[in-house]
Length: 138
Image (cartoon, rainbow, N blue to C red; front, side, top):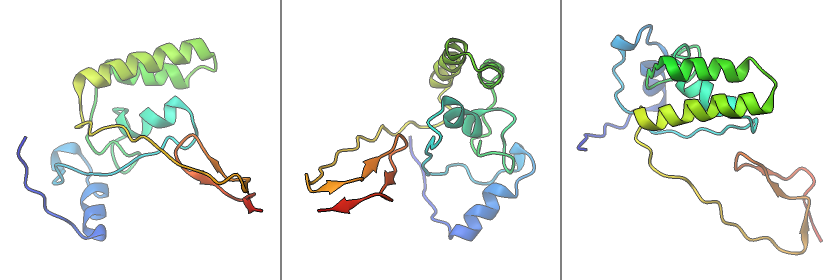
C-alpha cells in the first residue's frame, strides 16, 4: 500500500469527518485513531465503529463500513441478555469483519507495566486505562 499522509489541524479533521451527511461525500480517506471498549462489553467495541447504521454523526463508523451479516449479528447481540447468544452474535460479527477488513489492522497493543510493592489501590482496567482514585504509596 502506498499513501500520502496529509496532517490536518484537529478542527479541520473533525469538520471533514463529522459534517459528512452521506458516505459518498466523505473526503477523508484514512483516519488514524484509537478506540477503547471502556464498558468492557463486546457491543461497545463493535457497534459504534462498524455497525452499518452508525455512520457519523450518529456513531463513529468513519470507514462507512456496511455488511448485512455484521449488522444482523450486532443487532442480535444487543437485543439479548443471554451470554451464550451474545457471544455467538459477536463471534459472527467479528469473523465477518476480519474477512472484510474495512480497516488496516495495525496491531494489538501489549500493555506491560511494573508496580512497586509499596503502591496500593492503583489498577489497570479492562480498556487499558488507569484507576487511581484509591492509590496510596506507603
